[in-house]
Length: 199
Image (tube, rainbow, N blue to C red):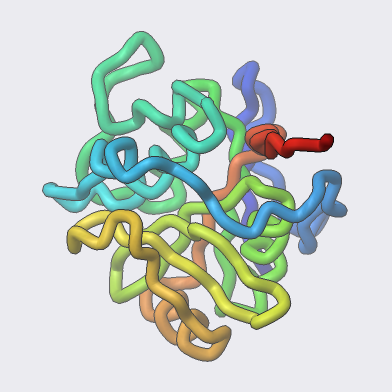
């Protein structure tokens, strides 16, 4: 059974058991398959000290314009810098303290977390995901037509060049870290307008 931790914006209920919800909510926004964070912004989230969970979550916050999440690595009005390793309980605690709403989903394997990961990509929320042994990265996108996952690392200097994985390889990497994903609850960033010469 998955465990989902929901840090409420007003500090209300902190934990929701999956007995109530084992599948993600219905998608409410059009598919946005890839993040689009500039390399200079991505570089703010380079991981020098084992803060991979906060680096991954910070990128998501920067993409969405959520300053409380984007500044996890720094001392700000939202709270002290969150540095070093983190597990689901620590993430639930600091998100609750900063007023960040999340789905904090753990499971036995990819079968438990995959519906949530795909939902996060499809709705443009994206996610911080376990990927590599004892490591967290940013779910950068999902190509549903080609059935590929894109993951941006935070410690190897590949900013702007996310890894591309087949579902089997992504599953292997995800389960090597432990099946865990952190997804923002609130609405995703608005779709960027595309300007065309209509005439």
